Length: 200
Length: 200
Image (cartoon, rainbow over all chains, first blue to last red; front, side, top):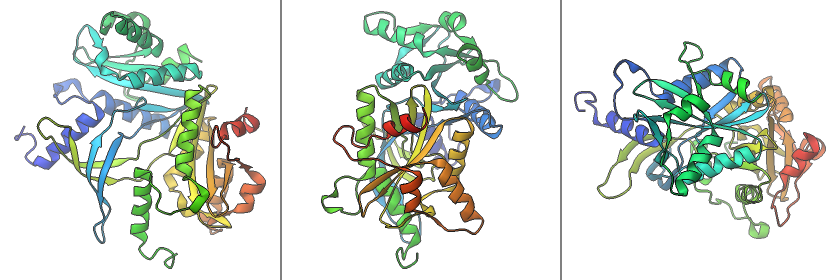
């Protein structure tokens, strides 16, 4: 690590970011960017072209201590990561409320349910209850495949897990019930196309 | 302005902290809670009763340094407040995308435009562009009146300001073009009622 990040501080920022945003710490070789980076670029494309207005929410932190140095910006000197009570992304497309969570896994055969908090699951259930559009975008890193899956299936597997069922969503569910989001140049991961197809 | 806020920077930091920690900086006597506290209680009421799903976004921070103490949670030891690129509140009501910013002012006659960043204004313009519902909720603390105003008027005054016009929205605009949100017990500030009336 010291070789890659000679400046310790930089490396720590990197780690913090990884932790906060749940991206992997591992390198992908030629596989390109993380799912989060791809989605940020995609969302910026959607905003710049006035296609949709989707933002990633800031990471929730519990601020404990702040210093006010003279002639410079307020400095937070003690804070902790909090469990998010909602999903990471939301916004508007054609007047409809859009809400999703993005996850990346190195698992080849399934998405482990431990990727989600119960608050996030409950949040997605409520989005559907209010006729919003809720889904997950999942990247299987080993095969570099990104899927779009309606939250209905996530909720179903969540309940099965609570009732003693399996603790992951099989990749076949993504293949058969979800939609492969093809990598392209612009936009990077065109998930709005899928929203058009299945909800509108 | 220099008279009211001798240290421009500090004032902004002060605001940021108030926002982050959700504590009051000013005492209001018997006037009760801050607008933010009232809105948090209102939004919780809406969620608990499955009326609407509206959340306040976390305060955006730039994380610079994180420590990983053994056997305890990651501790952020250096971070700074960032300017938000969107509004503070968003969510879904009857499938529609809802987006708003809440401001409190001690000014008796107008809401100063300095309460908003250009990114927030641009964000609200885009929400309307995508057929979302965008508005502001403003509390005039001195008279304890809370108004709902469609973002159309905010955008209009913003452009006038940029073109050399006045730097605030007169209280009469809230009284004549907006809607008074009455304080009640449950929900505290029933702004959904107004959404029903004017948009749906």
